[in-house]
Length: 181
Image 1 (cartoon, one colour):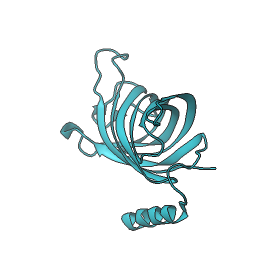
Image 2 (cartoon, rainbow, N blue to C red; image 1 turned 60 degrees about the horizontal axis):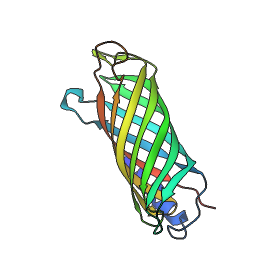
Image 3 (cartoon, rainbow, N blue to C red; image 1 turned 90 degrees about the vertical axis):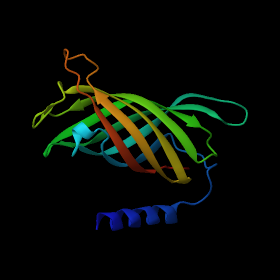
Image 4 (cartoon, rainbow, N blue to C red; image 1 turned 180 degrees about the horizontal axis):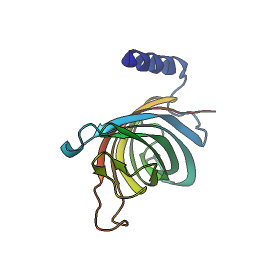
């Protein structure tokens, strides 16, 4: 049932998406939903689901052909599930996009400060409510208004809460909607 709903949402977004990749973008977006699972065997059963949004920052550098770097600020809010227990997770931080506006594939790199509503999930202890998240991923713009992406994400307390720094690696997949004007 869930997969059918996702396919319908994707089809609807593609139906509404006119134009080509040279459309002028709003500074807001993309917005979307992301979900995934732990990348490590030690963290089987860990999942994360979140809503996200971005605001394009004014710092960008492009060469004459359009290839270059753009910056944006991302905000997320969602749920982390570990050992059958749920907690709230939110993050805020910058990311860089490496690519060309008229080319559908982009490399995404970023780091964020994150907060958890709880730091213990069963026997799993993340050792602190404050965390840092770094990620690397790819974004594929199917059309000007819709994209799919993959990100590899690492969350840890960066050793700021004593000697224990368990960390968590995740594979996350998302659907993004862009706004053009």
